[in-house]
Image (cartoon, rainbow, N blue to C red; front, side):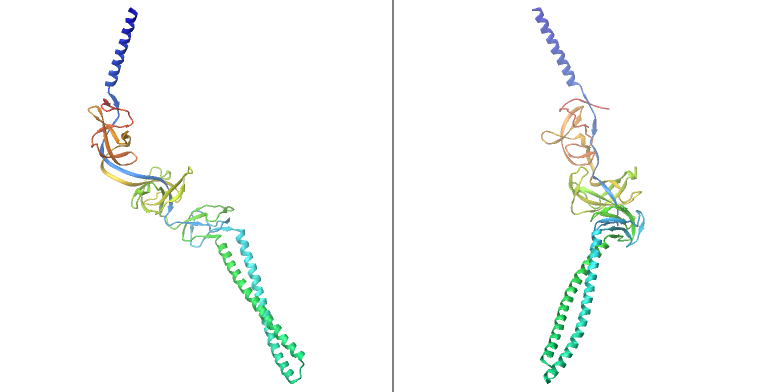
Length: 388
């Protein structure tokens, strides 16, 4: 009996200790870090990588492929309209040009030969017709035989047939000559396209080839800048383009700028998206956006920059850090307000947000203190102590 009483007493004391610990635990204030709802500015931005271009620059593309055999101009060198930038060699086009020239020369020679023969036969025909008239008179007077008259007629007929045949040959040759002249013209135009010339006065900004390199048709070979004015092209995801508009400001940063931040302005938003493949191989729909630079510092065409386009902006609104907002089981947004050192759960309605803060439209006034980390699991009424 005594041993049982000792066990019961031991169990009772253990339960009492557990209850005391639980009471102390649940009545002890939880230390939390808080923030205060303040009046501020929400500035949304669309951030993307961009590339610097010369505003009036032109990219030069190859109409026909070939091997680069000459690069007379160096990058950075000034050029005039018509200056040769690169010369390509294409054996197929060269062969077409050579064949067209050879065949055309042969046909022209044949036409000349036919024409000479025709002129000679016409002279012979004229003489034969005079002779026929003479023989016919003699035949009618009985001074020439039937055989003489028949031979004179046959000679005239043969010459007429020869003239008819030569005329057909000349017509066919003339037609072939026209066709070959067109082929030669096409070959010459193709050959001219192997010589890449500057379309305007300016400066050679880049070359995408070296001598001896094989270039495919349609490749961007070089770039000409007609002025020193620069702009930035940014390809914005189609999901973000709705907030981007002409006239918005932008901030431009780059390793080439070190700590400097340049400002720019959106001057053009293209009307349709283009299909692009990301660095990870993901196919995306992106819309080109052009930004004018107010100051270029040491940026050059071809440099990569980081662009932040300032889109939607609201001033004098109640804001909180985005981490202070959470979504409850009813899909409502809420915060953990601190009143009289206790947690009060408040449902709020939010508006726009930026990378750091979010707008509070309803449910919370300026000056209210809330728990900074909304992921902290604190129930309604929990005692808290604000961390210094």
